[in-house]
Length: 387
Image (cartoon, rainbow, N blue to C red; front, side, top):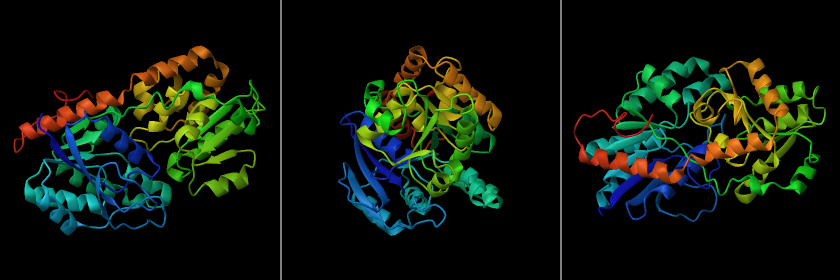
């Protein structure tokens, strides 16, 4: 079996804690054994890290309004030297920053096929940070970038439809998966619930993610406050960190901010809650949705991304029309009213269908097809991957 030399270019990877880094690591681990030789070109890790693959580290910078993002600086010479020593068969650009652009230009010069990923709605983020006026400029940049690649991978069908309407070409759906052994209802901890001042019958809402404006967390807080009129002991636990944490804890001292959790502790936080609330309107997927469902939590979310793909309303969760805040609160209310083992099991069963091994095989199939058709103009939509 021929080994495919795959160069992965990304501005975020483990040990960073975010959906892009996690899903990329899971994808690489899910690739068929012995099929790929992976090289990762990334911004230099900001904490000690033991690489699993060959890594080439490049300098990066910190965005003042989003310090957790660490975009890479242009590194064309470093990339060119690396690829002249060992030419990759394919390049997979996971992020569209200056480092990714450097890789795109070098791949074009060397005639290496490029796959790109659209993981983050950066053009939608701008409105949450007072830069709404740049939204169309950012969208134009993203469109030009991705349309220079052989295929753009997105994790959900509704995102693919939206991008195609905005002029993105050769868009293919490659869904994310979830580790359903790591995230499991069996990790529920009564002592953890006691820390939350939650008894066996106390309802607990959970949010996991960056505590930042683009996650629309104030809506989760407003829903929690409104529903405390019906469930006075209702708790809301926020797992994660970010610029909103200080403000939220000051304004709402009854909130439980558990900070960043990883590994088994994160799995225990999921499994020890009762309902997952996810009010974000900027997701391309929302990996936490699947992690919560695998942990046995029904999910209240807007009708988009992973929620649209995996939630059966009234069975494994509830969906609200996009941006309808009253409907979102009503969705949370319905889940609190119908809390049962049946709902929890339905959420778990839905998540079990999202298998990373299957995603890895689809990615291998796409890579093989690109290599076979290198230099040809092809339509890579339905014949290759489900959308």
